[in-house]
Image (cartoon, rainbow, N blue to C red; front, side):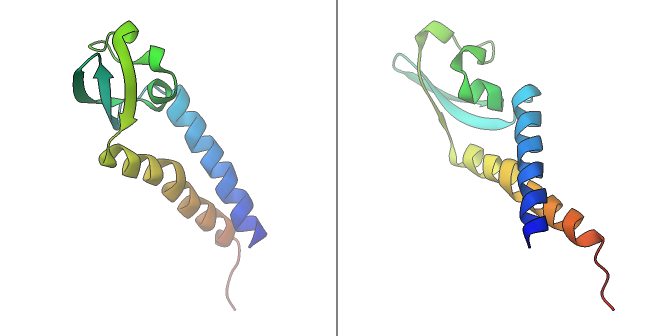
Length: 98
């Protein structure tokens, strides 16, 4: 059990680092500029650091960046779900049932 938890935490850290460093705009978020609110796909780095938003957004006028439900579910799947499944698979791969 400890092996599964260890591998899962390692996989979560690797996936988070990958999506933070790789500029893949796959997480949907609502961006508020003054009174204008619009949805666009942004990267994890742009979500955490608002100065890294995609081109149409004017960084100086952005007042809020909130993930949509689709963005939240995709964050959970990519940063928690898949790494836990991968950690479980790697940890139990060596154990053979007799």
